[in-house]
Length: 262
Length: 283
Image 1 (cartoon, rainbow over the protein chains, first blue to last red):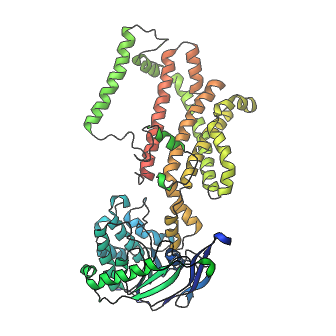
Image 2 (image 1 turned 180 degrees about the horizontal axis):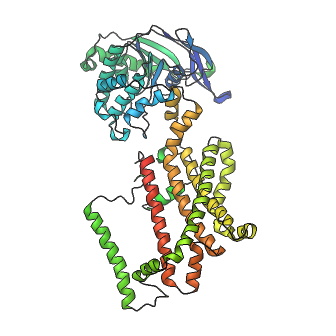
Image 3 (image 1 turned 90 degrees about the horizontal axis):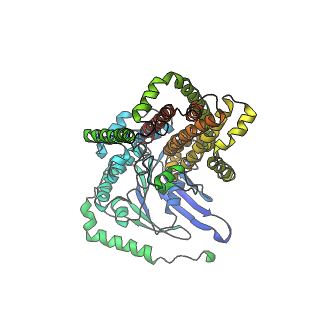
């Protein structure tokens, strides 16, 4: 269905420091990531562990204090056309209809929107009949579906998801997770998901990175053993439950390192 | 709407809101005021109008109130029709003052708002002076303006512009200050330039408040134009108000008031419509 990209995404000793002097915050400290093309990875961690900073840096929206981010041979220092981003709470523009929202990236890039592809995606996520509606007329789940179409319509190789389903109710969230699992299987895009939900991370990813705070660094990586396609029932299985608890313990009992000792 | 606002200066749109006026409210959306929904509502509106206007007519006649104290509604309408030829040219003068003064003032106000909100430091320095212009009645300047610019249109253009401009500016600035970092980041993630962010994110986000500002500015423009005409004399509806009242032509006086009331309703209706068209998403 889509071209398959073979560029890996690599992050090397990514460091980000906000402010200066005694009040400065080490948001990221020497973070290394190697994400293979077509891999679905999640990043979980306590609030303030720098996961959003990391994702926004990969999106080219933040500048690192030190280190580098590469897509294949290309260094990412500003937003890259092959990297798409899905934001918290759908982030649709309320003054535009669903279709106009989806065409927004094309407008910004001064390109003709690919109407066939957009229709196909609208159909795929099940909101084909709603393209002339305004965001406020849609439920949270439908808004997120529109946001998925917006992110995929320009066919990025890498899709970054910044806690996109955090505001949804549990049922809608399950639905969206199932949809994302299917979409990933169909498109084989490289996806990096940031989430507070360990279940969501485990259900969707091949790998789960656990970050710790102050300074923000990758603390542990888990390979997710479950076979695909994954049914929602997977989340009720004992294995799944056990792995959730292992990761939860990992996040809760990781002592916050002392900055002065670094 | 108020969630996104990071400003500290109260806007006039909000002030109107807090008093529970029906004009422009963020909760009811722009232009919620005069929306008519059903036949029953239309009938109710007509019934109330008949009771109030008819009641006034009857009471004034029963108690034999002299016309120079308070003319009956029918006398006012009659005066408007009979003396329309006398009043019409003055309506024209007033409209010219409003259109020229308002266009200049509102344009400068809007541009200034768009510009200074991009530079928080400049904004901090300039805003107190704009507030000063908003709160000072520009009518107070009219005698001085006449002294400097004569009895023609010029002092009135200036007064109208000075009344409308700061009002448009202060409200538009509130709109432009509504920065939603998420939406700006969205645009940036697609490689948007600063100019694209301005035209495709900031302006649409500011639009509801810009329209509030334009409406407040228009209302203040009318007040100031009429006031300037009353103190300047010679031409314009305000000057006719002075003449008619001083010659006890009370019916004609109220005929002019009626024109002004219609003008006010038209301004309100126009901006409500504009608000629905351009900022209807915020409701």
